[in-house]
Amino acid sequence: MSTEEKALNFIEQIIEEDLKNGLSQDKLRFRFPPEPNGYLHVGHASAICLNFGLGIDYNAPVNLRFDDTNPAKEEQEYVDAIKRDVEWLGYKWDRECYASDYFQDLYDWAIEFIKKGKAYVDSQSSEEMAKQKGTPTTPGTDSPFRNRSVAENLDLFERMKNGEFEEGTHILRAKIDMKHTNMLMRDPIMYRILHKHHHRTGDKWCVYPMYDWAHGESDYLEQISHSFCTLEFLPHRELYDWFLDQVYDVTKVRPKQREFARRNLSHTVVSKRKLLQLVEEKHVTGWDDPRMSTISGMRRRGYTPASIRNFAKTIGIAKRTNLIDVSLLEFCVREDLNKIAPRVMAVLNPVKLVITNYPEGNEEWLEAENNPEEEVLTYRKVPFSKELYIEREDFQEEANKKFFRLTLGTEVRLKNAYIIKGESVVKDANGNITEIHCTYDLDSRSGSGTEASQRKVKGTIHWVSIAHAVPAEIRIYDRLFSHESPDGNKEIDFKEFINPNSLEVITGYVEPSLKTAKNLDHFQFQRLGYYCVDKDSNSDKLVFNKTVGLRDTWAKVESKE
Image (tube, rainbow, N blue to C red):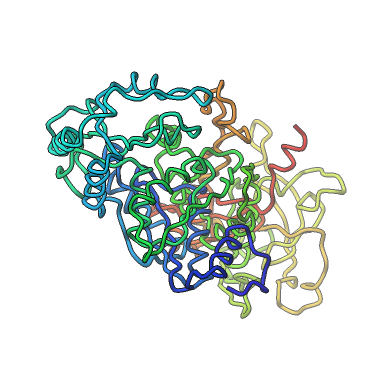
């Protein structure tokens, strides 16, 4: 990496310092270590971008390692989802690894610990252990089983492995210091008994390593040079290093753990436990519900990999936890979609518009620009006829001077088409407008080059030809939580802040070019926002998700509050 190209963040400074102090460039290796007990969320996306981004910047390999040490909560479904998310974000891993790949190595090392008097089998209950561990201000006391003989420990540990004991009856602990100021160093647990089927190793093992034991040793076995964790693992670093001290060979790379702060996102929760709760209690339709903060949910919503990568780059890496406004993520999404999403016409709250002087039964196919941001502009044909749908909000019988859309006696341009003038309305028995009648200027067609076509009018509105309109289910998503920090108050259940209006389902009408749209295709519905095709869409029924509006409407709402 060229240090002159940009200001380095503190993690890059650590790497540069290690390179200056003799670490060979070809020894750099990073890893992303998810636990396959749920779907990845936006916080994981930042960690993915960090680790794989370092791999790209330093031309170094990055391992994808699954921390599959708890078969009670882990499933193959989650493994597959995690791989899909990392690939979708645009990254490739060098090696696909699993902590379970090293179960035998870890077990063999544990045997050596016992033989050297550095580990013992403890047979206390969890309640007894909690009491003897002490508090942050009072030292712990030794377990009554701390001084078991090596022979007894080896026998018990092998029998634990063979499944002779019930869960909770014994554990293997490292023998460090029960008076240590760091409570994590007070004889931490290395193994517990679990009679659970593992998604990779089946029923081979009845003891499973704890994260603190498996983490650093897995890094060491894979020769990871830098192991980056979130800030809550800072107290664990001392234990990470102690475990490495017991097995480290000076001829090999010694992994270095360093920590960075979580970047929490407003109006969301990112706890896997809470996300699972939302799924299981059916507050959402699944892990990939477009309101979820999961990567799969954001993908289904219509967020793009580039927008999420840019968001991660924009918020950067910090040493202090803070709350990032979700509007910044939405800005990044909007910015990317503006470049790539074709402009199309859709009407979501329709009212019928009749052009009274347009020839009966006539239709035209007008040329419409796909995206003005394209380097080489492309066009499509849209049908035009006597009867159209326009947005109900685009018409008022009487309006003040600040209303620049259609009113009686005023003119507006129909996008890509003609200038029209409001003439009259038809109402039902309740006084609701059912039809708007207008006239059009035959010579004013967009792009025709006539003098009339270049005439300036105050407004331009979008439309869809009724005869050609394709009905579509439109899912209008809003933020799942109304509070910026829904799980910030431990006294209040985060579900109290669920936004009851986070989803509105309506029927809209779209132009016929969208008949062939496929899952995850992105579009800008002109003047309305960005939408994408949902996976529920099929040849008989189009379904679109609202990804994000054209502008941040929440900013206005929150400023008023």
